[in-house]
Amino acid sequence: MPASTYDYALVRVVPRVERGEFVNVGVVLFCRTERFLAARVAVNRERLQALAPDLDLDLVTAHLETILHICDGAGPIGQLPRAERFHWLVSPRSTIIQISPVHSGLCDDPVVVLERLMDGICG
Image (cartoon, rainbow, N blue to C red):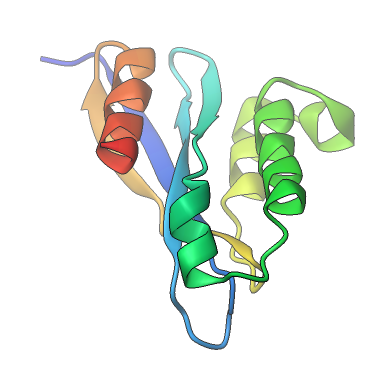
């Protein structure tokens, strides 16, 4: 039986918030018992351009990279404990970058789970 619980949320780009259309671009995963907090992001530029031709993809990508930096402990938010960083990252927003509801699971290795979840987004 898996030894650790984890929580994760999908990272979404919602180019026109009023329309509610989105593209999943990443995952944030937190596993308290393994002291693990990490994110992966992969932007499908062609898909986003098709959905929103005027979207500044370089700016969106820069903001998505901030999620990675916070997970790695950078900046003021990155100085918070992992659990607080995770909760800050997954808090609801009404901006172009949004987070799905949080889901939970059991695992032996959170890195394997994170990569499997990203494969589901990129595959």
